[in-house]
Length: 233
Image (cartoon, rainbow, N blue to C red; front, top):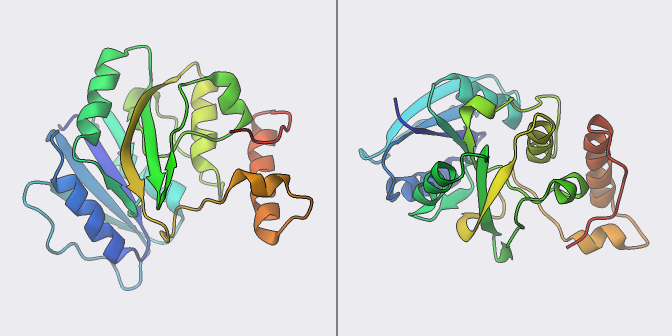
């Protein structure tokens, strides 16, 4: 059994998936396997040209969305750690090694997360703070999680599944630890990742995209009984 399983949910992400595999093949930490969950791609995803250095397994399911695909991948193995890595993510070669060492050194933490880039923009993130986490989503899905503390993603949510996950874990007494390094890049244009600047939420007019963002955030706040506050940097 490998220490880490990297779970990649994918839906028609063939070109992005190849670049993700290249970054996984370059990892300095080798005790991991990859499970690709094809979430109903048309035509179905075929794994060709993957590196022999990486153990990869393909699982297929009818299209059910990213949370269901991630949960399906988690059920496929019994590894110590889980890393959810969308197809548009490219890891630094030392990413898995840094995350695993951090969790080994911080037994009080249930997951390790880092700074990252979204296209051209760097997200430095913050050291773990429960009050800040309840106020705003600042921890990316691509964090190394102790399987024993993973509650599963809420498959009913269309957005903010990662924020909901960390809040659910917080309510169970499980906290994270921060790695102040940029360990991965999210390539703009991926089908499962979206971002826009927080200042847009403070403008006097609301675009349809901002309204959709606020509505989705409201669902999370209601679920976790959080009083609304404007996002802060």
